Length: 142
Image 1 (spheres, helix red, strand yellow):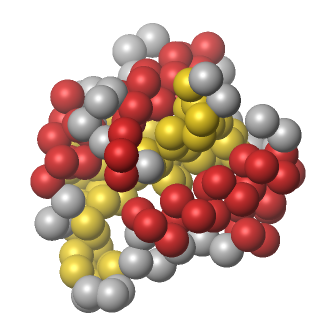
Image 2: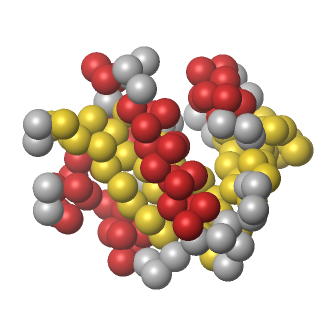
């Protein structure tokens, strides 16, 4: 899959998965960044999901992760998370951070299985609908 196809697939899934989707420009900016990593999951040439994360020095931030609706609950998110964590280990990352909607129980459960723990809450962080964001952290073993 070339970069233009990646961007189009990610943008389409952004609109499906998030109430405040990233724009094409935001996705392109991440793909061009020295710090951001944009990885897609595809099987037999079919786009299934993606992950975007940023690594700066010894810290990483999970920015986006999503699977197409027809591929959810099939391990796509888990595989993408495993890919990110392995890359972070190789890069010497000590902590990975993320924010998640308080109502997103499936995501919170998946993050918990990877060792992420709630460290704080951001009141009214999300819009459409307005909702608190849970900040989670995974301390990497060195």
